[in-house]
Image 1 (cartoon, rainbow, N blue to C red):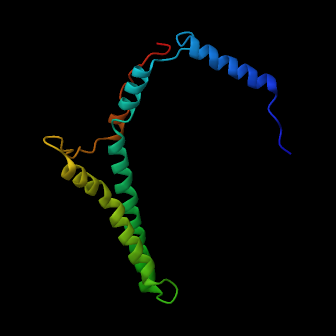
Image 2: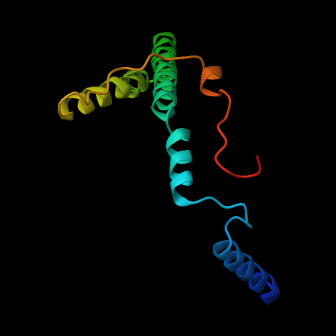
Image 3: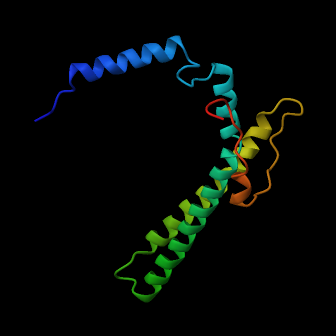
Length: 137
């Protein structure tokens, strides 16, 4: 049995949204320019994080494929060779995606807009002092 949301809760939430839209400074809101700048700043290091994840998971897949090939060598009737070969291939494709996407971006670049490779940094460097974009501070 599904419970219905009481109408008073819906009315209160609607009133709160109207007040927040009418007086954003009262609701500690931000204007669109500040919000867009915050999103761009937050996504600045996203390609580095995605590249790191691709290299990590690709490497783990290759290691898993090597393990499956070892299991096939020990007992060929139980573990087919295709399991290990497929994992090694998929791991190589996943680990090769970041350089491939950089190559695609550089080949489509106009003028001096080439991407270039960004050196992998420590994860702690990605979590520096946060910038404040409005709000309580």
